[in-house]
Length: 177
Image (cartoon, rainbow, N blue to C red; front, side, top):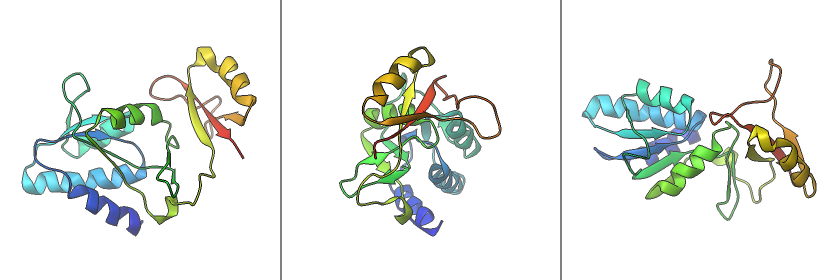
């Protein structure tokens, strides 16, 4: 946890009054947003945020960030976490099932900051790669992915059926090992 807090403090130094943030999802982003919320209260900053998920939107509102969208504002900086980062800085995203919107925000932003601690670093990527799939295309995509990896539909814990993303899609976790 200390690594996430320390990395979040460094990212917080990049935020200026009037900035627009692309806001990722997950536990690391939650730490960052809570710290940013304290700074907003203390310094009276105005910060706009374009959230990647309903979780991110809730946290942004709770922390005094004004909600915006890509139609009205271009993100100055995208703040996000990652599930794993290799030695070439390739990132795996999608553990929280918001990776499509996160990737769009990263692409739209002038600068991208991925906050990770040492537990997320690896010499090479060795975890499943999540792929977001429209329900309509599920069977086709599953068959095509099966030709070169082992896809598995991500299912909810304690509920029947697949995890549904904020976009209404499924997640296939693909094992390339």
